[in-house]
Image 1 (tube, rainbow, N blue to C red):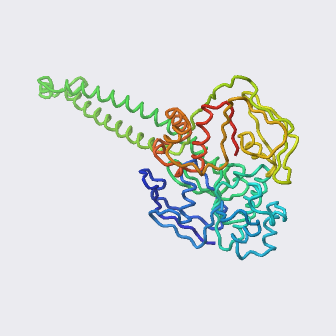
Image 2: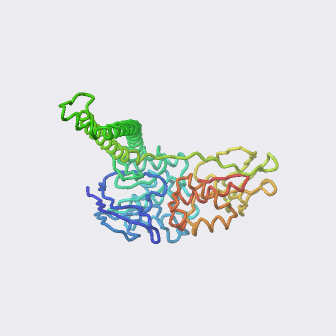
Amino acid sequence: MSLINVSNLSFCYDGSYDNIFTNVSFQIDTDWKLGFCGRNGRGKTTFLKLLMGLYEYNGTISASVDFEYFPFNISDNSLNTIDIIMEIATDAEQWQILREIALLDVSEDVLYRPFLTLSNGEQTKILLAGLFLRPNSFLLIDEPTNHLDMAGRETVSNYLNSKSGFILVSHDRAFLDDCIDHILSINKANIEIQSGNFSSWYYNKQMQDGFEQAENDRLRKDIKRLETASRQASQWADRAESSKMGKGANADRKKGNYGKGSKEYKAEKSRKMQVRRKNFENRQQTAIDEKSGLLKNVEEAESLKIHPLKYHTSNLLYLENVAISYGNKEILNNLSFSIQQNDRVALLGGNGSGKSSIIKLLCGENIHHTGTVNIGSRLVISYVPQDSSFLTGGLSEYAEQYGIDESLFKAILRKLDFSRVQFEKDMKNFSAGQRKKSFARPQPLRASTYIHLG
């Protein structure tokens, strides 16, 4: 067991005035199966890259392990898969490789096929196997479920549960629950680490949020009550103050009259009411200060509806007896379906079954196929890819390039948890989730069919 120590970490991107991290300090045990959660743009991927030493930062990060980042950058994906694994884990034995891929439900014959011919899910499993075969490595696993079907997610979660020593970034709550024992959360106002899985952390967060909401409501009522009491005490004291001085007050003193109606009595009463007013104000300020420390980590989501333009007929597209093949290998056949306006269609299937090929075929790519593909005339199909890492440039330029209303575009992004400062950044500095939102959301504003692959 050893520790990864993060001390007074501060970081912001070049040209940006908002810090991603400010004086952050915590420790991570290298034996943990650590889940890493937080909303898009909070700095999850950035932190992993800081651990890898890819950016300059203020503060210190110390560790006795080697950090390995997933997805691993392949130099030549035309190589056979076995060569790719040996490139990642140079000292791995044949039996170790076979053991790892068996745990990931990958057949041995995959090792002797070019890596680029593997499905995205198979590539994910191979890269994970290779990285876990590297000695003294602590894995930084960034969104491994992007290319996995439901069966693949279960297989990989079981695989990760049998390992230790990794940080796992994922928005899949069930996936996190199945394979982690600690969680690191980047909240709106702080960073916290808890023992347990995502569900236990989320339960604790809901309980804390509920307690803070109740306290906030109580303090809000107290502040209003104290404000009213202070105002009333001040008004009474002012009236008493105006009537306590003058000849009548001196006459009362000479006569030794200190009764309830005397000026001396009113003066003392005024003094006490001023003290009470000051006490009310102090208590009110204390309640305001206490209230200001609440609800800083409560996450909010605005409602959002996007209404694409209507197409002139109800029939959008249909496929009839379609078969798709790569070389001599046919990956699907006898595929027939149609899509009507307002349909929401889920395309299910195992890795390598042809889901991506169907989407690419509908988007007009040159996919070898037989059968009938009929797409409505002048129908605009929007496509959201799994990988949006190629996006660069500013949001304004992006909107102009695709003929999108910039004001509406940015208004929608605001509802998707974009801060205004994000609008000035280059999209290459967005998180993966922010890039996906930027890519995904504007296109339906001018399209009749929305295809999301991911």
